[in-house]
Image (cartoon, rainbow, N blue to C red; front, top):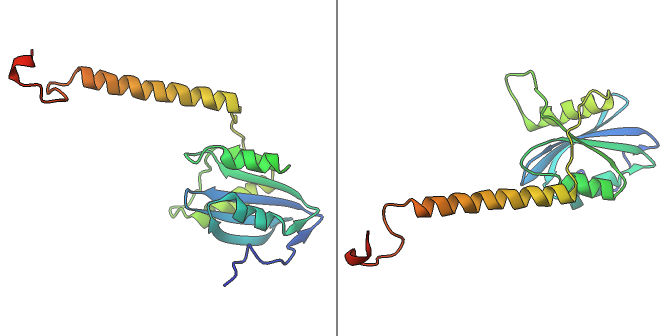
Length: 164
């Protein structure tokens, strides 16, 4: 069975298109809107190739994509920018509803993006991200070292004569 985002049908031609994505590790909920009309709303695998298939259905369109900053990082941002698509990583949006769903979140992102009502977060450069990762790793190793040094029980069974 072919998924909606894979079909060859052109969804829009020559329009301004806003795409809101609720990003998760395994899957993404995507909503596409243009001129107040919802053109697409669906779930797809959490990889860029699936999103790219959907993006190809917007011919000669000015495409803008927004997703919330979170644990999934900036890989999607990098891929979109490399393909010449305007991408925004935004602060998490309050839904205002008691029931929070991925579908509602992606719809709200698309709607707010269309109205230019979203606030971007700073996306660190590759060098800044590498430096952060280095610091994060150093902190983890220092914590492990500190824990090992302060252990009451030795790591190896060295015998009673070697315990101070």
